Length: 100
Image (cartoon, rainbow, N blue to C red; front, side, top):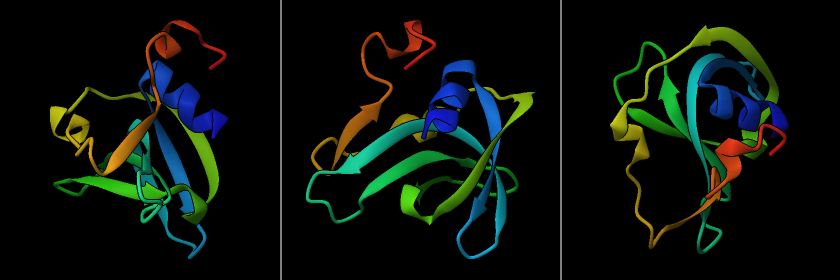
């Protein structure tokens, strides 16, 4: 999860290898936890070449590689139901501390 947090902090794209072998290039935005633990902990982001925001369960991620390319924020990825999710990262002050 540290690679993901660092990528969010620096607005770097990441390459994800999922447990099913699929490799995705993702613009990571938030790490969320389902309030009822229905969805587990998820990475909210944007998959390149796909039109919508997505949630990728962290337990489905086998490997994470931070890429050198940056991305612009798409506000569609920042919208989520606060009644369904709890924000894990970033929280207040997280983006000021590169070790978070």
